[in-house]
Amino acid sequence: MNTHFHSFLNKEFINLDQTQWSELKNDVNLQISPAQIEPLLGFNEKLLNTQQLEDSYAPLVRLLDLQIQAFQQQRNVLPEFLNQASVMPPFIIGVTGSVSVGKSTFSRILKRVLEVYYPGFTVQILNTDGFIYPLSYLQENNLLARKGFPESYDVEHLVNILSLIKSNQKAQAPVYNHITYDRDSTLLDINQPNILILEGLNVLQLNERENTLKSPLDFIDFAIYLDASNELLEKWYIKRFKSFRNNSFKNEKSYFKRYADLSDEEAENKAKQIWHSINAKNYVENVEPTKSRANLIITKGSNHEFISFALR
Image 1 (tube, rainbow, N blue to C red):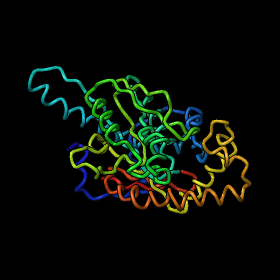
Image 2 (image 1 turned 135 degrees about the horizontal axis):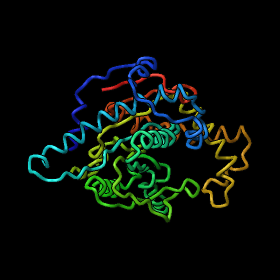
Image 3 (image 1 turned 90 degrees about the vertical axis):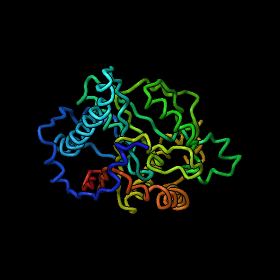
């Protein structure tokens, strides 16, 4: 078990508002412009101005830098004692939260600011959507309506890939295709990054199917949970569904092509149905309970801005 991560589990959260958080950036200056961030935004996110960007992400980068320094020092102890050269494993940052909360956008922005702050580092993102069983398997096992629930993931495959990554070996991970609603034929090459951002619904979930199998959180060195009110999550999901209807759903290969011609009212009703029957249910049962395992909880406001923070 990852003692670096689990050493946080018995500590209380410290709550901070946006002003208190922004004051903790100290002398960290990201030197990154909103124009560099704009291509990374999702359908629902608005572009932050320079000050908002600094106030939101500079304290986070400083916090992660302190964690990475401690991580490196800890792993240097035994090689130094044995008079051996140390080989540093990747520092793994877990990012989780509900569907539509903005995990992917946050991960892309975090990757970018970390690359700016650590110009010599390689930073990669691994999305756990790629480890959802293939569509054919879900259909054959009556799991299609449970997609995104714990039983829909090939956890053993994910753990095996994380084991390779953490031991500084090259790995190839499956990639999820949001057009076809299935695994892609291509694989993601993960080549010994300095920092890996592991993003997905199941990042902090425990594996309860086999007592001997590890869970993704056993490999995580720092975990971030993105939070928002239930009302905002549903609103963002509906807005995203409508955006997809006008864009990716029109693709001939889209699994959801049947929704491309829905009216606004029909699209909203369909989005609400999917949200309440699948995503909200999964959130309450399997995602929200993992919040207590995070090192940092970031709560977002109506425009996806950071409004409060809970830190161990």
